[in-house]
Length: 313
Image (tube, rainbow, N blue to C red):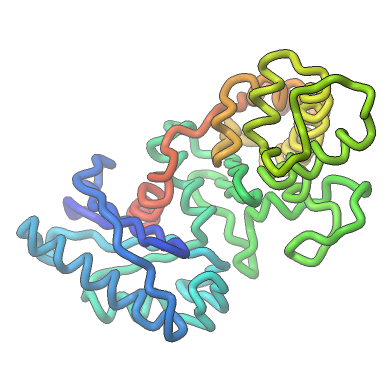
């Protein structure tokens, strides 16, 4: 194996780039703008230019570089994206185009799946090979890893954790078109939805939470940590949804560890404690003691995972 590889994480605003040694040491990281105008035609050429510039800066040649891994906000199958709405891409052959522009081997995967791979490699699940990673942000994403390999699925939709059916209680549809998805009740926006519902149901409970435009998942967990009675109801409801769904996923893949990341995970150990409580209630007996831990890589998970894509190929 060669000494270096690149990990690229394409976001809607910026492209995060990392140069790694193949042992996992991060040598350098930087960002470039994501130019989505003109159907995103400049994104891959810009990445190629950034990779070449870094190779020149570090005096590297193709003989030194194992390849380039790329995480993309959209489904990926065999190195191609059928559509990536945030990038304004239609069908795009990432491997073919970027490989041609750089002269390097290229591997590509869905960004959430790739971030899960990063957490397995150098993050919260380091040392494990069977992992479930769930990211709680504006939506709910994640990835499933079995025997060290990402589960991509037949349509590139493997690991779409946020779109499992969690509840029959909602009337409005999810962004995916279905109703009652985990994303609708366990994302940052989902927690706010649950909070507004409980505020309406329990006007008699004194609480620091108010539906005045400043309600947020952080506000809910901050109140929960102070013993706020309504926040406790909200957090328990959220944790029951998430714990039950993680229990369902765990009995399919039997992971060594479950990792929770994303913005909501900044609530820290209180979040882990209550989700674990409900997970143990619903999980299959053989899986009940699977540890649930916080992610460690933060915003760097994508570049680590993208680099690992190349090393796993």
